[in-house]
Length: 391
Image (cartoon, rainbow, N blue to C red; front, top):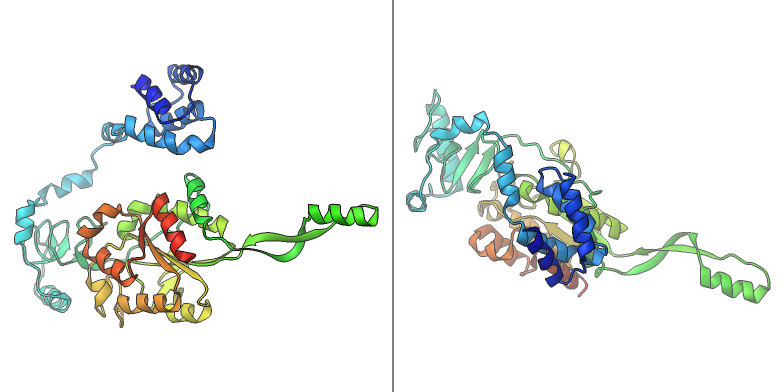
């Protein structure tokens, strides 16, 4: 396998030599990588890659040659949690059985029926199709399946079918100091540049110093303001729920954007944009910012970037009261259209692979609302998005 890895790197254009390969083998003999695939990745990258321009090629070859090892390692290292054993009673349905389960007839009917079941039910229920419980096909409860349900007491989403979530969920702020993997993202973001010199004169103007020194006959130091990217950006991050699977990619984007743009403001939302957003997820119920206030605070020359997987119930986009966490008086679509009218330069970055978009109705809907300005959160997608914003 290691010989194959060596030949694959050379075939991909990475200038790796036999000496570097032998260095890696010596490090492996010394057990410097331990038993973790991640440790071996960093060890082999340090031994075999001498130029950062070849890091992408190395990553592609590593992922191809050692595909699947991480899953094997995790399966061997992780013990089965006791909570999993408690859920063995869950009824696993085939795709045909899932298609046979019919939706209840709309959001209002679903909530009305939930209130009725709450009034009737007096004990725990499991495995059924009607009562509030677990592991069944009822539209109310946890760890079961229903195409349109109200999730109650479940720690995370599995099928992404719930139209309401009856839990108080805590989200974590994104880390804007992440450095791993941000290099290429920074290069893609640099298309969105408009340089200007602003602020106090604190940078040495070498050309001006030479010119004035030659003119005056003595050393005359000249200073100038530091050069900054003058583009102004509003970043809206979808946080929590299914976005937990994409935290690393989102944090890398956040960190790169923070270093590239001097004039940048970020806000969080959940699933779809509504009448308020927030800055800190710890205090997202106490300290929020009205979306109307944003529209009247930041001028229309700001570039707007939404980051989210757009995976949600269609009601969250089209219906008042469709939000899974609160009653929104106006549909999410209304707020998104207000943003796109206020800020002509507006794109949506989606961490879900583009070939999967057609399988999720909410992604298709948001893509249409944004005028097809939705791009995958990949280097190529970022490049396309930045080109769109500078048009």
